Length: 218
Ligand code: HEM
Image (cartoon, rainbow, N blue to C red; front, side, top):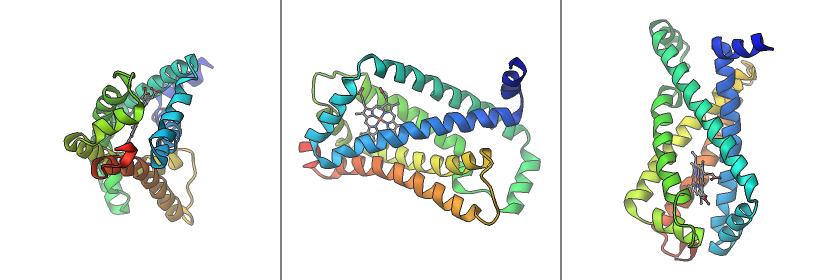
């Protein structure tokens, strides 16, 4: 058991597996967060009621948040380790990936978009989580996203999220061994569609708050 666990941390395949597992859990969170936030499309009352139900879960939310922080940390730390490993092995890998045409905008910018998401998360939690919750959450969200500097920053960061997810989902499938020359095109496209759907829902909220005065009750 100890040997299996230490192998997970010390072997490159083990580290990629941890990256994939943490990425999968974060993707579940993002999907649920995107679907939950999509209640904004039905008006401020529906969104506030959804947020109210979440808060009524009480201590379960704290357990969930601790788990989420842990998974984010694992994903970030192992992402940095893998990026350093890739950097060290660069000359050989570069030629292989170039000739196979396997590099995409998503894979090339993984570290950059990862850092952008990290900065976004810090800003986002300060905006919506570590803030005065005596007002309705719809007013808090609208108050931030309707300001052009914040709204534009959110839109840029969400574009980065879409790019990060497009490669992340594809990479996840590879790590899970879901790979077949006949279906790889389909897998690639599915990863792209899922990434665009998640980033698209968040971006639509940010764009509506920025551009449509009546969104979330004005
Ligand atoms: C337009 C886009 C987004 C909106 C409007 C939004 C809105 C919110 C709101 C209202 C909260 C709850 C704050 C609270 O009640 O404490 C929240 C929490 C959170 N959001 Fe977002 N979010 C967006 C995008 C994202 C993205 C892209 C990520 C991740 C990359 C993210 C990660 C989180 C995390 C980690 C929390 C804390 C969860 C918790 O405290 O339970 N959000 N967001």
